[in-house]
Length: 424
Image 1: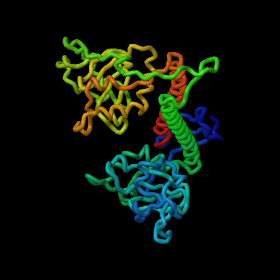
Image 2: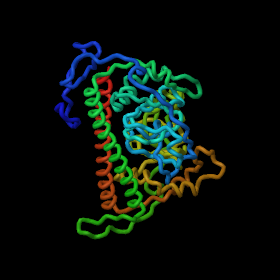
Image 3: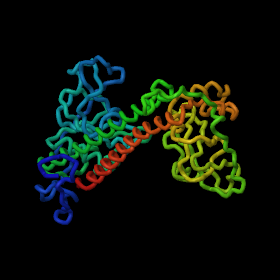
Image 4: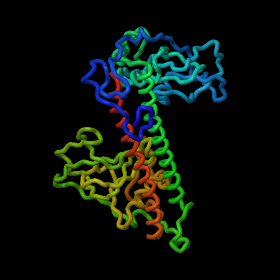
């Protein structure tokens, strides 16, 4: 990347400087040199406090844009341009933003979370209470990135409290800074903003693809959307089979205690190693005789319900052979194209049946279903050719999602590295 642009597809024109100047970053744009300035935040900024705007004061048809402190944790990043909340409170009774303000919550649950800075790129926005306002001639975007990263732990150490932590302007004033000239601040801010925009674009693209996949799966497996053969003819009508007709229950137990690779079924991550999921072994490694042996490509139903799996998840084991708690139901399809069934269990089409056969009085966090009822679950069953068409179509979407995820991860890693090396 040339020094005249902030385009991020190529590497920026940066050089190592740590050897030359004691107060300069490890990476720096070519046109800048010399030490960065040392100062306390109090010497370069003035401080204000927001004024109360309660949740009840927020209105969809409000006339005045406003920012509430909780939104810094849930909604905004280092840059605030598009305001999500409005109020009908009078502007004359509130504290309003100036372009380039940096705001930090004045209270929160954890010390590390309270160190959350955002630059407001809009004037006339009302600030709620519990917001520290930092107003300076520094580039606000540079300052917000700097405070959020190189000074995050320093800010966290300033916060006080136990159940609720507080951060006061009197504490922020003591914060030590190292910062360059305004042109260099602006250069860094522009470049990091471009990286952030790329991350937001990729995040949005990933979300839209995932929503599309979810919607199209519901249509495919409910028969609303059908494929045609290579001659343009509609495939035969779908059959409906019981799970027990096309899959066998797996109930082989680890009686010799020979297998100690314990698996768990996560609604979000699928079947994973228990050690990887919990960062430790939950099961007693010396007493796994009663656990079911789960082979590669076996499917597992976890009856524990959650936000992500309202009747419990069914996932396919793509790892090596392992064992699982007998609380789970394990089954093995005797049909080809396992991905078709894997995709089906990502939909909610089968949820209604499980709810209909769950025993009343079951634990609130777990479905209570007997095996005979579970294996009567109806499964849509198109012909082999249409199953392959459905699977290939969904595989293509999944591949696009995975590609975006990889690019997103790489860009986030790139940003993390820059944040570590571009500040002092």
